[in-house]
Image (cartoon, rainbow, N blue to C red; front, side, top):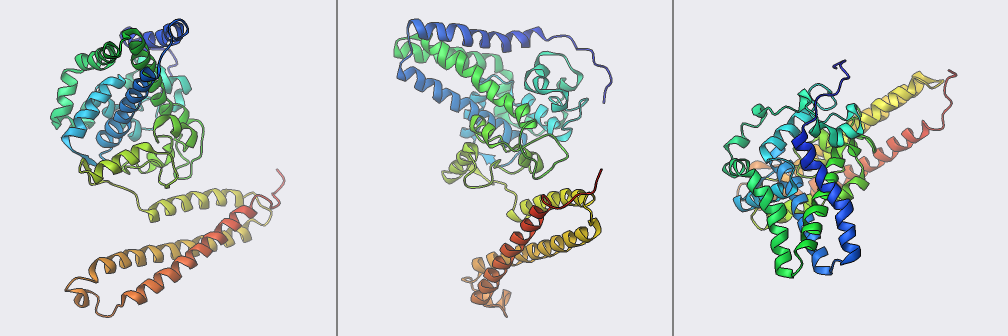
Length: 389
């Protein structure tokens, strides 16, 4: 880690581009609203463009191009390229390159472009407006993206596209509706500022507040509240652990509109090869974190050796059951897909589907009981007597 605490020079162009819109959004937008008002149509276009540019970042820049979590049809790629220009967060190749370095060197102040260990405001905004060495453009990790015609086109015409999407489109919508200034202020400036800072929350707030069930060694955290503003990107500890998963929120009830969009696109032929992390690997990762945390607590207990032995036994039994369940689940899926084929008896000569299903259900119940025992053991650590300091 660098010991030099001096501030690099300001990038004045970046400061102007990123600083002027908030000034307009927080002065002219309310002034115009107070004096002339905004109608429902203007607010509707504000919301539509907000969703469009945010989804282009989360589903396009982030999950499609930065992490290759799925494949997309050229039509979808084109829409994301336009939406990315509308979001005004740099061209996709540069954005994805920075983001890949962030994941590779997360929390390394010298190599992570927006390291959260430099402070909240650095990771939120300052990294873009000062000439830090870690933020210098290096596309060596984005050679695959340099082969994408749509991204090369976007990069070549980025200035024209950002003006078209952030000025031309709102002006056109306002001209059609009859109030150019209202549309430009709402769908242009206010939408731009809010969408940008919602994205910045992922770099800053999602590395400060929340839980770390998958990798406690890094600052990235899961925070459902941040997901409400970032279209599902707030489950950040999970994402940093399994970055190639097209989902961030893995539970059905997790607010992750981006995964719903990608899945919907797969149903209509605009997306394919959706990658996801298995439930087995997710649970095994969480268990390992819980086990290591509990081991540290054991060292502080009065009867630490006895509790450590009990902890190890419960953990080993649960992991063994989980492994057995995962193997049987995989076998059950293979049987289900093969039982109607002509080579069923050749592949599974001694196996009856009903027998396998019964064994799978029994093991599922056993795994459920093991999980309850494990959680009960973890809960006891909060009430046990600890050694005096």
